[in-house]
Length: 47
Image 1: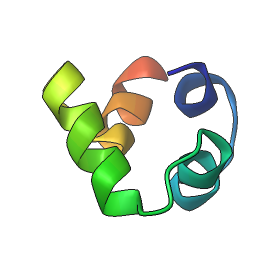
Image 2: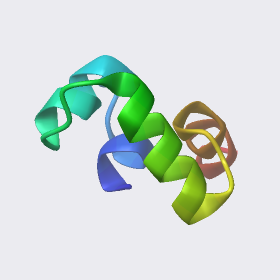
Image 3: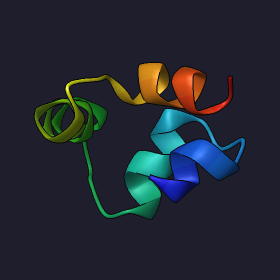
């Protein structure tokens, strides 16, 4: 979550950085854990 909150990496870069090969898999798993999409989480964490 720190990469999403604290960097300006885009979601594709974050996806590969943490070991996923498909952004959809990362986004779906993130949603299951947080009930938010990664981009929603980034927006909310920067308010």
